[in-house]
Image (cartoon, rainbow, N blue to C red; front, top):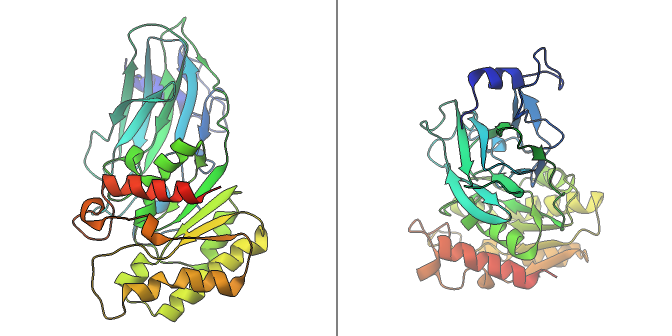
Length: 343
């Protein structure tokens, strides 16, 4: 099943209206029967739902990635066609992951990725053939490092789309750099934030940005997402760039003060800078000790320190060859370590 060009055009509306009559079986991306979760609120742009995370990322534009965002609906159709648009808004090309997923009734069904090259603006239809008609929950889940937008959905009448029950569970907002965004996990479902959320029944709004160093105002951006709990996993880029430790400590302090000023009770779990294979003049331990120092100095009851050694327990088997990012085994261990620490 392929959504026709005419159907896509008719779904490209402004303000939810259309000058065209509806096409039976085609549902616009902003149809109230279709829900979006594990994401910032999308904007409806030219018939597609676009995401922009609240921290602007000059130089990479990872704000247009929405790792793990879900388009959710139910259908009794034997086959469902979902239109996606790869928007080309992420300007960095050397650090990307294009693989998204389809889950049906809560279980992995299949992968999808762009049919074009990196940063090519392209629209494609993902067709999910189930073989028989039955009422099912569909979740289309975006990759961790690509700009992808959700478009219209098509089924063959008399089959219909119906609303899915809302996702529940505490909202986790993990903040950090590329290790939090998902690099170098094989795909989104093998990244530690996704696995942690799946295993614990959390919703997850990922605020990891590749190449990020801590900026105090990022604390405001994260806490304004109304998390039920936060994870802060930072220091790797400060270490690799040899940013003065005092600067890192000041910035992490400012980040946590910004969180506390808006929500002084949300639990914030943070660790020292995790394992890195690089050997540099200012040693890794100097950065790894910052989190504990800041927790002690601030004295906020909401801050919970987590031993970094529980997150990477065997670098020889858990790290990517670059010595900075976990491999899939390491992603599992990081998820396990955080889960053990979180109440």
